[in-house]
Length: 168
Image (cartoon, rainbow, N blue to C red; front, side):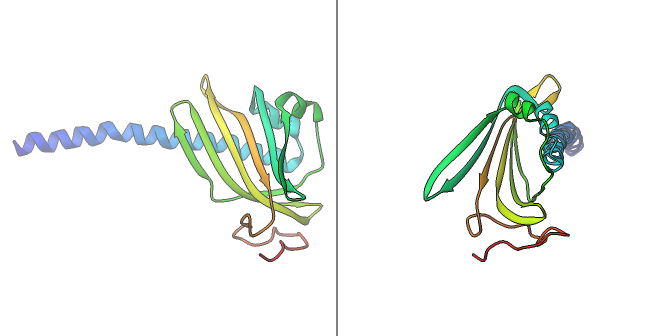
């Protein structure tokens, strides 16, 4: 009886291992898309960023101006038409990755510098869908804020930048 129970536990543990490995592979695949998106955002290659998106994808920028919350929206198509823009420094940190079957969400706090000077911080929220064997961005929504409404990068200011975030 004990031997049968031991074998069942070994076999059961072996069956669970591929599921854990597959889950880790999926997390890695999702983060590879997000990392690529961050690279293209930083280098100003917005047309290449749209290559990571579904054709119907949308990008929302949410912020508060003059006390009024609002947003701007672009489509993947308009993103592609923009071509290039000047490089920036956007640093994401502490990603929270959630995957359920063919959808994934990555919550990624970030800080951002323009012309090597502090601009803002916020959260990027990437919603991805599995298309065939590839993860694609269906939506990217990001907030534009100042501390204390958002967190600055735990490593402090980006190397080679000037200015610091406002004190909370």
